[in-house]
Length: 117
Image 1 (cartoon, one colour):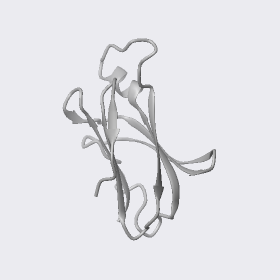
Image 2 (image 1 turned 120 degrees about the vertical axis):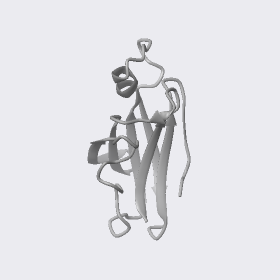
Image 3 (image 1 turned 90 degrees about the vertical axis):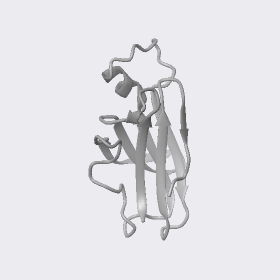
Protein backbone atom coordinates (compact mmCIF):
# COMPACT_ATOMS: atom_id res chain seq x y z
CA UNK A 1 0.00 0.00 0.00
CA UNK A 2 1.05 3.63 -0.13
CA UNK A 3 2.64 5.59 -2.99
CA UNK A 4 5.54 4.56 -5.24
CA UNK A 5 7.10 5.51 -8.56
CA UNK A 6 9.31 3.85 -11.15
CA UNK A 7 10.96 5.40 -14.23
CA UNK A 8 12.06 3.56 -17.36
CA UNK A 9 14.28 5.17 -20.00
CA UNK A 10 12.68 4.05 -23.28
CA UNK A 11 15.51 5.52 -25.38
CA UNK A 12 18.10 3.19 -23.86
CA UNK A 13 15.78 0.40 -22.70
CA UNK A 14 16.76 0.57 -19.02
CA UNK A 15 15.73 1.99 -15.64
CA UNK A 16 16.39 5.75 -15.32
CA UNK A 17 19.06 5.40 -12.62
CA UNK A 18 20.22 8.76 -11.28
CA UNK A 19 17.22 10.79 -12.44
CA UNK A 20 16.33 13.56 -9.98
CA UNK A 21 12.72 13.53 -8.75
CA UNK A 22 10.70 15.82 -6.49
CA UNK A 23 7.49 14.95 -4.65
CA UNK A 24 5.00 17.67 -3.67
CA UNK A 25 1.64 17.84 -1.99
CA UNK A 26 -0.66 20.28 -3.78
CA UNK A 27 -3.63 22.38 -2.83
CA UNK A 28 -5.05 24.56 -5.59
CA UNK A 29 -2.10 26.42 -7.16
CA UNK A 30 0.12 25.90 -4.12
CA UNK A 31 2.68 23.08 -4.03
CA UNK A 32 4.68 22.06 -0.95
CA UNK A 33 7.89 20.11 -1.43
CA UNK A 34 7.88 16.82 0.50
CA UNK A 35 11.18 15.35 -0.67
CA UNK A 36 13.86 15.27 -3.37
CA UNK A 37 15.63 12.07 -4.33
CA UNK A 38 17.58 10.35 -7.10
CA UNK A 39 16.38 7.10 -8.56
CA UNK A 40 18.39 3.97 -7.77
CA UNK A 41 19.77 1.44 -10.27
CA UNK A 42 16.26 -0.02 -10.69
CA UNK A 43 14.72 3.41 -11.45
CA UNK A 44 12.98 3.59 -8.06
CA UNK A 45 13.20 5.66 -4.88
CA UNK A 46 16.16 4.24 -2.92
CA UNK A 47 14.22 4.61 0.35
CA UNK A 48 11.27 2.50 -0.81
CA UNK A 49 7.71 3.82 -0.99
CA UNK A 50 7.28 7.60 -1.10
CA UNK A 51 4.50 7.19 1.47
CA UNK A 52 3.59 4.04 3.35
CA UNK A 53 -0.08 3.19 3.78
CA UNK A 54 -0.23 4.86 7.23
CA UNK A 55 1.22 8.16 5.94
CA UNK A 56 -0.61 8.50 2.61
CA UNK A 57 -3.53 10.95 2.84
CA UNK A 58 -6.46 11.66 0.53
CA UNK A 59 -5.47 14.64 -1.58
CA UNK A 60 -3.53 15.82 -4.59
CA UNK A 61 0.15 15.31 -5.30
CA UNK A 62 2.80 16.17 -7.90
CA UNK A 63 5.84 14.22 -9.03
CA UNK A 64 8.42 16.22 -11.03
CA UNK A 65 11.04 14.32 -13.05
CA UNK A 66 14.22 16.03 -14.35
CA UNK A 67 14.16 14.55 -17.84
CA UNK A 68 16.60 17.03 -19.43
CA UNK A 69 19.19 16.63 -16.66
CA UNK A 70 18.98 12.85 -16.80
CA UNK A 71 19.48 12.55 -20.57
CA UNK A 72 22.20 15.24 -20.61
CA UNK A 73 24.08 13.29 -17.91
CA UNK A 74 23.82 10.16 -20.11
CA UNK A 75 25.58 12.07 -22.91
CA UNK A 76 22.53 12.43 -25.15
CA UNK A 77 22.95 15.44 -27.44
CA UNK A 78 19.85 17.54 -26.85
CA UNK A 79 18.61 20.55 -28.79
CA UNK A 80 18.43 23.87 -26.97
CA UNK A 81 15.86 24.25 -25.68
CA UNK A 82 15.15 20.57 -25.22
CA UNK A 83 11.64 19.38 -26.03
CA UNK A 84 11.13 17.99 -22.49
CA UNK A 85 12.81 19.70 -19.56
CA UNK A 86 10.89 18.57 -16.50
CA UNK A 87 7.86 16.31 -16.54
CA UNK A 88 5.32 17.19 -13.84
CA UNK A 89 2.57 14.69 -13.08
CA UNK A 90 -0.34 15.94 -10.97
CA UNK A 91 -2.56 13.19 -9.59
CA UNK A 92 -5.12 12.55 -6.88
CA UNK A 93 -5.33 9.94 -4.16
CA UNK A 94 -8.91 9.07 -3.29
CA UNK A 95 -8.48 5.74 -1.47
CA UNK A 96 -5.70 5.40 1.08
CA UNK A 97 -6.44 1.70 1.49
CA UNK A 98 -5.19 1.13 -2.08
CA UNK A 99 -1.68 1.27 -3.54
CA UNK A 100 -0.91 4.16 -5.90
CA UNK A 101 2.00 3.41 -8.23
CA UNK A 102 2.97 6.17 -10.68
CA UNK A 103 5.34 4.86 -13.36
CA UNK A 104 6.91 7.04 -16.04
CA UNK A 105 8.14 5.78 -19.41
CA UNK A 106 10.33 8.52 -20.89
CA UNK A 107 12.64 9.55 -23.73
CA UNK A 108 13.91 13.06 -24.58
CA UNK A 109 10.87 13.47 -26.87
CA UNK A 110 7.98 11.66 -25.22
CA UNK A 111 6.55 10.23 -22.03
CA UNK A 112 3.62 8.18 -20.82
CA UNK A 113 2.26 7.29 -17.44
CA UNK A 114 -0.60 5.37 -15.89
CA UNK A 115 -1.83 4.27 -12.49
CA UNK A 116 0.03 1.05 -11.83
CA UNK A 117 -0.55 -1.55 -9.17
